[in-house]
Image (cartoon, rainbow, N blue to C red; front, side, top):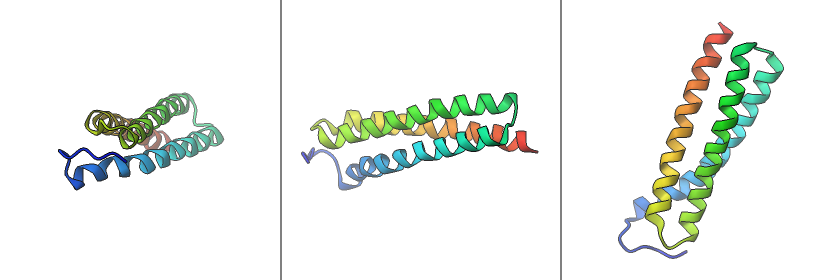
Length: 105
């Protein structure tokens, strides 16, 4: 792995944490999509599963950016993209969680 001397060890660890976590979040999205399909929630369920499908693509992009940042010499740019897409994915999952929680009440 090529190291950029301008980055501190703390900054280098961010991309190493984003890759496995975003890959795990893709699996979480797939699991919740399956649960929504099994429960037959209704019209809100179709919104939830579509949002989670988009969310899984967002986490996949985050994992890809994280992987490229570890393999490429230009860590800062791809790590920034990985961080931003990961946070967008987390916001999407939060919206889905709220929709899912209030639909089940």
